[in-house]
Image (tube, rainbow over all chains, first blue to last red; front, side, top):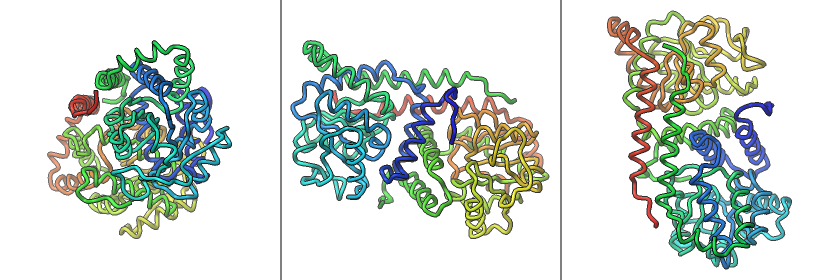
Length: 254
Length: 254
């Protein structure tokens, strides 16, 4: 599909095409495409821009990642399809490990995703040969790597499922989610829920990581003052306001 | 994926699986899966139930369909994948013609969709060999059948794209849309926008069609009193109220 650059929703449409490509390459799956659509609807409500509360969550996430002993970025099919370079750049800036984690796991897809990340510049990708399990999760969803997510103290889970987010929180980890649905179980359960679009959120976090490396005082302050409930409430208010604004657009007709 | 019947979102998850099956059968396409995801997000906001204003729109739609001289139901890949039986039952109750209409058209997919509808009980399906064009639409999106949509006075377009909805309205047709996004161009441009989920909306319309066949007075009253802008405004208010209710669910965490 050809989309002119002038199209008001150019970025969103290009992202969609990228995901369809990732699906053709065997990296994303149909369920991932549907999940992406859900995100699109939320992002439309958010105005396809990073909101002020999302920016606060991203800065707090950066603070946790900078201070972590064993930070890990978890990557699934949609993340590998949409933002492999952004993931690798952020992992390098922190520095953090990268681990492939799939909800619908096949060995082939895990390998393909690892290859995609290596092509984007990663030097090591965990999760292709899992050797441990996340408790309270059934079947292949639980598979993880001892040296990666299992040992981690801070995990960034972009586009993660609610069950796994909850299981990681129960393991005592600081869980940072990136999820456009502010009402999802993932957003409710994460330690720091970021309600923003993946390819906007990752570079923002990276920028803050670079800043906070040189500012331990601000890093401590962010972690001390962040309040998840208040932050999410600000996101809800923002969406309510957007909805009232969108209603007023001319509708046409009797 | 196995989903227990007790799951609070059982119906939604089963619908999703049905669409993935339709995609595997070459009836739905990746873009359709993403569009479905967008619908899921809106339906979540609507509480996955038919709202009061949607019911009013469905009854008004039935009134227009009952009174029509040449009513047509337009069917695309997602509609054929999710509700072939519901389409055929409604077409028979009115009675209306059925026409395949694809945004991303291939002859093979048009044929497959027609076959799916015949398997669901349709005796005639138009649109496989289009012989006319809808004005103001480019390329294959414009293809239609003279004896079907082109000649129709009332068209039901479930899950339709904004451009085509607008083009049909410009042709002077009464356009009834089924679209979960109340802010979409389709919902804004249709004569009677129904903001409800496909498999809930179609049987509702069918029930009203059967009732109104015997009640021409009520049919006239519905068409006379329906106000699109007021109806959509009621949908917006309902979603705003739902959003405030959802916010109050316990979030957990500091």
